[in-house]
Image 1: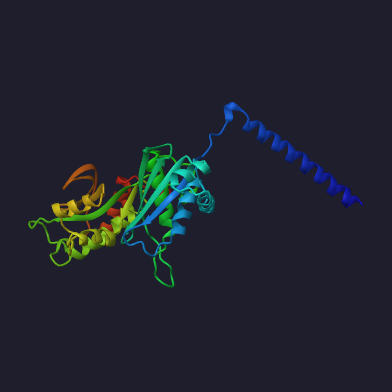
Image 2: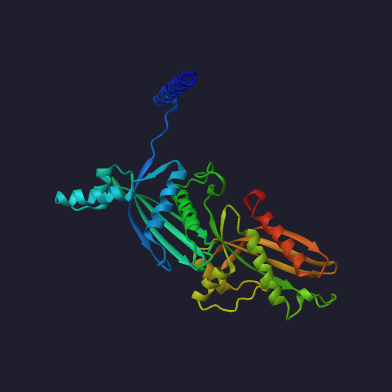
Length: 346
């Protein structure tokens, strides 16, 4: 009997608290000073899969865009099932189920067109958000993300994480909102990101100095490759850049029949032009200079404009040991410094 009374008391208290919480929520919702603006309703009219995306399912793109909208706290996607059902209703009414008519019936604020493309390991999502009441009013955004994971058993690319990030960045780009996902947790905290390619360092030897293995004719090509890989691995978590891996960078060059790219010399005009045509905005390069004291490494972040590089920022360091592992460590530290990568970003 005592237990029954105790449970009844708990149930009464819970019921009272629940009612009080609901009353408080209703009061806040009706308060002019604390009104939360309604979310912008998005109707996805078309998802177009482009270059090298034949193994991406449309449902994965839809899910990524849906989750990105949820994380933004600003948008909500009208379910595909609702759109499909409305199409049937309109056909039964002998009306053409156009995106504009469906958007009007379902109360959509924007009609969304999605394009997905890929080159090697870089994914690109383009969004166009059209005002159904005024189709000439549209916001466009592009999001890039590196595909970093593969399925262990098959070795196939795992698209889901990159799709989500690319959709987030495309939404933020379309709205010109750099902090759209600022309050998202952990890896969901994403910012608009410019495409960045890590180039090689130009090895500048001084024959008057004692010979270093790093600058040897046979060795420096391999060292340059290792150094570029280390710089990429240091840059990959830069929050404001979508960093091409060396494989994807070389795939871009291959499109223009540029092969055997050397990572121990300055980039050529044709290489920069190829990257520019792929809308790569930033380039990381520099020099390794032999000095009487040892060597100096300089790394520069550059803007790509046409066929030219314009230096934005440079960091440098000196070292006195003829060892590639030490050089790789120093280069990684400089890259993180120049791209403003904190330990929490990695």
